[in-house]
Image (cartoon, rainbow over all chains, first blue to last red):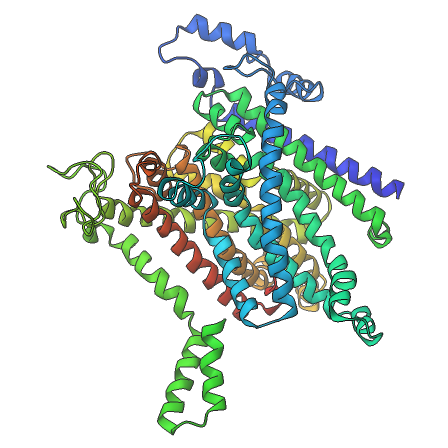
Length: 306
Length: 306
């Protein structure tokens, strides 16, 4: 187990190293960040001054080390526009994004899991086919367009829900549905295939033979085991939704991390964009590591293999 | 698929008059051989993209002379048959922009998928066939790039590089190659141990020869299946970038930026500016998903559950 943990942690560090190198290189390869930031027609001396302020006149390896040092000290550089450390901004917005992502996860669970179970238990029934259509639409309808249509129907036409902003549950329903829509569809597919696999196994047959009622077998034996891959996907997806809900947060004026990234794009605040992307990458690497270790803890076969 | 199996059942179960049965069988055979529904949706869009110059009633980038802005579609009050689907905020013809938008979406979707597929397949083959440190390097880069949530990474690259259609194609190719690399590497690992590959090596075939003659043809099916899954994702990603203003630059008509343009008018109920471009994305992506399902069943039954 210890060896497994060390190897996985080492992989995670290598991944983070390549990640930081990628971000660092992209920023410098795609042109001088200073000219991106500066007002058009700025004087050459001013550009040079900004360059030395940012340390951009130093050699690349030195700059890279400074960048890594920033990541480790949790600074991630200073936002040009806010004049604050990017990580401070990031963690200010994190609770809002978490709130939205949790609501979206809840909605996708409410849609995806029951539908997936029904589809698996009654294969090729009406509900199974209905589930297939929902899954197909879930993967085909862009979430941000769904958000706009929801605003049109429920805010503009029916006046039931507020168009945007943060507040009570009524502010959360539409953005959470728009954000969770895609995930609900993938959850439906995964629950269905996972349940199908479990239902075919020997211990389910045994449970039926013992004379247990059908719903007990489903709930206690089948669903519990089918849940493992589902929860894994949910964990990774939660982190992605926290960091990548850019358009949904823009449409619904939700003050989360996605909107922070959007502001960074528009104010050409490249340290902000770079920092948010890096922070998102770190979170995803960490959640993957945690899930790997949890799996190994639960299932000895995983930590012994390879 | 419902539409492919049902006619077959009818033909088998009901011993109808011979000519009727043969019609049924011919229909079901055709349905199994050709993906009818996805093609019915997709072909018009492809034709629209190819012949946009002849089909579009107006120049998509110039206002219609003498037309009002935000004219509704012709069947609504205040609409006219001059602009069938109405006009946008500059008085440009929405229908013409939709038609030319199909061209942008399909070009980016197909070309982005080609870039992702070629890069991913090439790297997957190299990693799987050569093994050793090449494999390690490629797979660690794959891990790192997968850890950046695809859309966040694409936004980051697009912000740094600046908007143009060809930049977007390359960016989306660079963001989505990782899935191919993983899957193809796995396949090559098992192919490498197969007898025909071993024999080719013993017979003195050079590495490039073995790769091109024996490995590549055997992984192309998987590449095709993955491509059918990627194309819809790439189209939605392009729409997302264009929506955020870092995709295909104006005045070029892209469905994503049209959605963004129509967003402000949504609040006063001018729904057509938002609903039509979104429907375009929805239909094209839906058709590629269905086409992908069909392709998967035909090419590789093992991948059916992906």
